[in-house]
Image 1 (cartoon, rainbow, N blue to C red):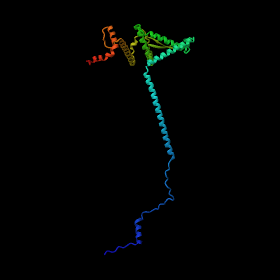
Image 2: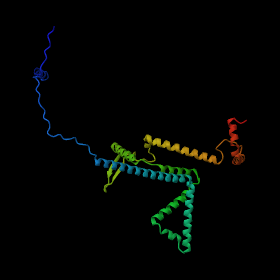
Image 3: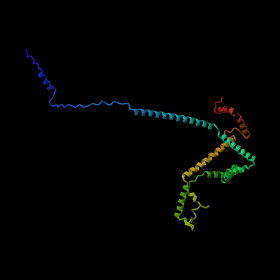
Image 4: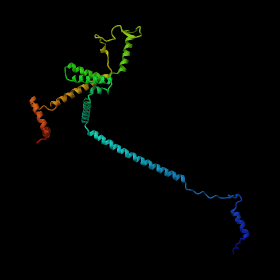
Length: 300
C-alpha cells in the first residue's frame, strides 16, 4: 500500500503561500493617498456664448432685410428706366425736334406780340439778354450760314473743286510734332552742307540765309521730287480717295433712285419711263409676287 499523504497544518501552509506570492527581488513601495479628493468640476451653462449667438443671428437678419430692400429698390428703378427707354424708342426723334422747333417759334412770336402791345422795341429788349461779343458771334454765324446756303448750288467745276478742297483741308489733321522734327533735321543738314547759313541780327534775331538757293523752294525748285512720304501718310491718302469714290457712287445711286434708274431698264424712251413709274406707284404692291415668280421660273 502506498504511504498515506501527509496533511499540512495551518502553521506550515501560511509560510508557503507567502513565499509563493512575495518575491525577494521586488520591493513594494506603499503609495500615499491624498488627504482630500476634490470632486470633478461640473460644466456650467455659459451665458455670454448664448448672447453672442443671438446677436449674430440678429445681425444676419438685419443684413438679409437690407439686401431685400436693396433688391426691391433696384427692380423698381430698372422697371422705371426700361419704361422710359421704351418711350424714347417709340418716339420719333424727327417729330420731337419738329415739335421743339415749333414751340420755340411760338414762344418767340408770343414775346414779340407782347412787346409790340406794350409799345416796346422787341429787338432792343431781346438784345438785353446777350453781350456784345455774343451778338457779334451770332451775326457772323448767320452770315456764314447764308453764304454756305448760297454756295451749295452748282456754279462751275472750279467752284466745285474749291468746295471739295476746303472740306479736305477742314478734315485734315497735320502732325505738327513730326513737321517740327523734319524741319529741324532739314535745317541741320543744309547748315552742315554749307548751303544754309544762320546769321544773328543786331536785335538778336536769327535769320537763315540760303546761299545756293536750294533750301527755300521757288517756282524753279525740283527738290520736292526727292521727298518720300511715310507709309501712314500714303495709307491715309488712299483711304481718303476710297472714301471720296464711295461717296460719289452713293450719290449716283441716290440720284438714279430718284429718277427710277436704279433697277432694270424697262423703257424705250423718257415718256415710256414716266408711264412705267406711274404704273409702279399704283400696281407694284399687287404685281410684285407675280413678277418675282416669273423671274424665278416658278410661274405656271
